[in-house]
Length: 504
Ligand SMILES: Nc1ncnc2c1ncn2[C@@H]1O[C@H](COP(=O)(O)OP(=O)(O)O)[C@@H](O)[C@H]1O
Ligand SMILES: [Mg+2]
Image (cartoon, rainbow, N blue to C red; front, side):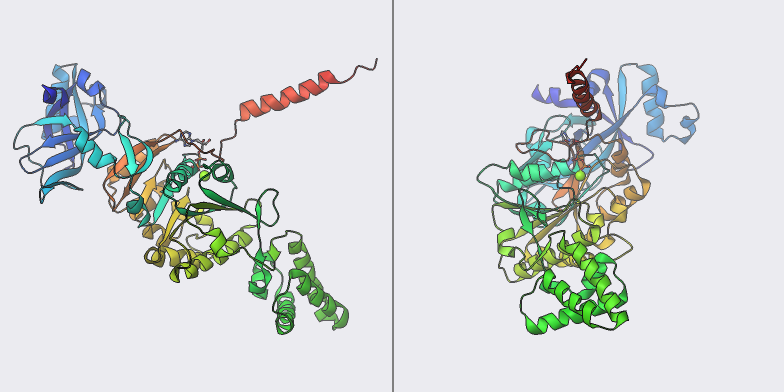
């Protein structure tokens, strides 16, 4: 009896595309099916998994199409023509479950597709759902038919991860959720945050998770992340400021002079040496020195150059989420900070001075762009190719995969893909995500906010799910609510107008 309830329809056969299977069902049965539901068809060897992608209705079919149809599709047409309550579903073969050494195992493709036992198509059993969707202890969401979706900690972290999707689709929200879930496992997490959007998340983590929040330069309420001036060369300064070669060369001399005299020196010390050169050099040298000095004076007001940088052992600790908030700082300086930090992390992990760590690079295309090199490109590529064996797991998030360095993207063998519309970005995802079929990729433009597809080695079948909306921490990257802000502002000004004392 139970089995009967699980029955959804029967296999009609393959359509003109070999991986697409047509399923005949009825109006009431198909009405129970939610988007992307996976159904099962048992053969003598295995259980074939079929993901419903669409239903064919009479209005989809024109007389002309009949000539282009396969035999099975023509049959579907005839069935639909006869009975208004019969439905034909299009489904994709997404994998199979076979028994190997006495254990049920998921494979990404079946041995063959032969309806040799029966034509029955049924719902998944609870055990099968658990195998497919409930793969670990990180609770990230549910499928459209309400099955819990969980990801395995090691399965996720032993490979790098990319999180891709157009702006506003929910990437940062998901990253916040992953941080929250990983924090339950006492993870060491470093977030490179160009928009300061993860501060509310980190601040609202449960008390038992440590947090270290750094701002570049002096930012109220945050720890000061300063760059140690002694690690910065004249050419680095030239890179940040765009100073001319003449000024950079005088600056180089000034730094060399200082290094001979002092082990530690500050930006003010360099400025003092340059001042000296302004006053005691030939006219052309004095001019170059004064330009260099002015550039450095400009930098010194930012407060992010000092004599001490935070120790890596303080930034990276187990059971700690660290955020480097970089909003409002020039790209070149952000890239330099990221370079410096990641190089130190890479070296420290090689010597096992710090615990294994998850490094999250938001807006990754700004730190490792395709087609050009910025200062952070090399270290991100190095971590992408070698970090895994040293216990550095990279999460890169980007709305423009097409603009992200292809080495970095291809090393992220787990992909979480959200809504994407841009054709160039769709093709980068198609290239980098090895086990994504065209049909899966073609669905991406239709994704809603918070809808995601996870695929990769730890996921023999890609899982399409809704990211959990309830978080215990606050999300910082809120969309601007124009209507209510305008209303609030205008109410304020209205109040001011009406509160104005009437002097007449
Ligand atoms: N799964 C979700 N549930 C509820 N709200 C979400 C979800 N994902 C995103 N949002 C909301 O959508 C908006 C944009 O999400 P965000 O993660 O900042 O987008 P992205 O980083 O992709 O640009 C935010 O206001 C966020 O609160
Ligand atoms: Mg974002």
